[in-house]
Image 1 (cartoon, rainbow, N blue to C red):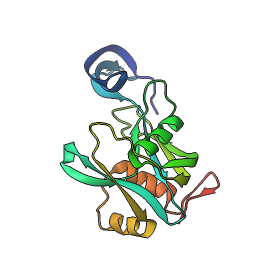
Image 2 (image 1 turned 120 degrees about the vertical axis):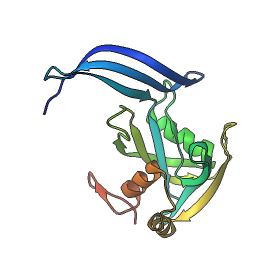
Image 3 (image 1 turned 90 degrees about the vertical axis):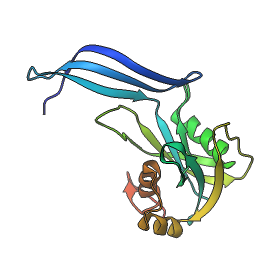
Image 4 (image 1 turned 90 degrees about the horizontal axis):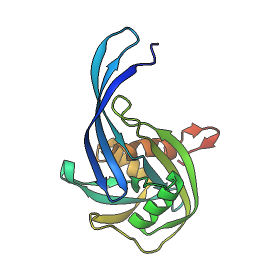
Length: 190
């Protein structure tokens, strides 16, 4: 396989930020492939994201319903959010779980990392499993309108089969944490 495309130039086309957190930068690079072909390539850089699968017990999950402006609909999801500057993905997982659901976890363990858009970004999504949950107070930011919902894994499976779960991070996290798949000797709940 050919590797090592050479970047001849880079132009930042756009930057979206909120305070210290840069959510997205859009770049257009001029490249030369190993075979000598020159081309333009548009890609984005975005802060990493965490998705947390919170287990109340082996059969019940803590999920949220949240309005998503680009789709103009309320979606059922696992708690998730962007990794802020100088924050570890684990710290983000704990923070997002508490902020969005009010739950704090005794144990938060890393399950998997994946790249959601390999042709356009280096962004990583970090999936975590949270157990030993204790309920507390939510801390939604001014843009979040979130309703917490306790969902049985069987009900979630039915919603997925009925195409009622559309969030990619939630679908991937479900497969990794709830569908019985084994990853490095660790079995997912079922």
